[in-house]
Length: 108
Image 1 (cartoon, rainbow, N blue to C red):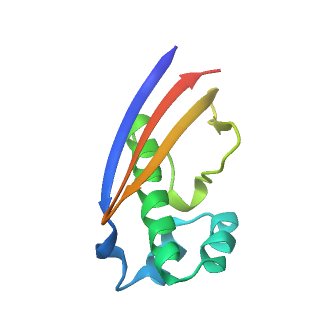
Image 2 (tube, rainbow, N blue to C red):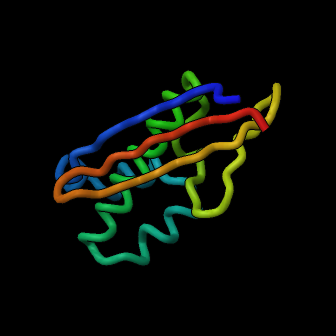
């Protein structure tokens, strides 16, 4: 059963000025490793996509946790709370100067 849906869009150019500071606040430590492995253009796109995805997760789950506690990765994601576990489905897309993400959270 679906328990939440979230969506967010980010203008990539807004993250350029303070990208490393934003990355430290937003990205999980595993994501920071990936972020630092990319060249500048791809690094900002990655950050924008993850920022949008985490905002979508946050909206879908009515304010779950801090962004840097959420790790967005390619395999199945499970959101563990003190009440129950949820399956988290995230889709991220980039187009020119925008990154967009959708999230659907389902009961496991």
